[in-house]
Image (cartoon, rainbow, N blue to C red):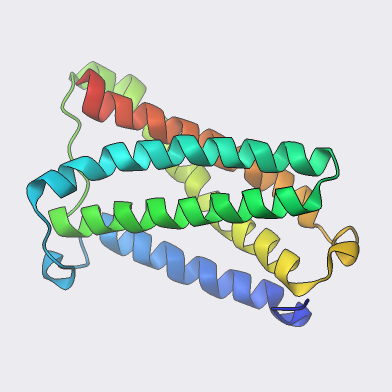
Length: 187
């Protein structure tokens, strides 16, 4: 069943990527006023990082299930797992952006300066870079899947792009959990 016109996959990927990244950078840069989102009790804002770490761990599991399923030829399980992974990513991003907007930007690192410079910042930079690179790859793989019948997907770059995106996605989610642990558990 065709949900997205085939000739529009690249255009839609580009538009969705630009819009998504613009929203993320605007929230991270404090360009979206806190008054634009509903107020939440402090405990809700403080709970979001833990919820996002749990979402990240579950997403690592669903991506792995999806990857294994397609390697075993189980297309339906792969589809369900990858759509679940994308849904988890959207949920993670919505909570992350809400918290960023509600609190006025990212929180400062509470640990020692040396850990900040030589551990936290490099991990955070890699995590952010991979997340940015993943967005267009994920959109492209999803839009290819929605634009063609399953039998025709083998003729596209869906599998190649999907493998690359899944690898980066797994690393990004894993590093996100490490960042959470450094920010909220260790320090």
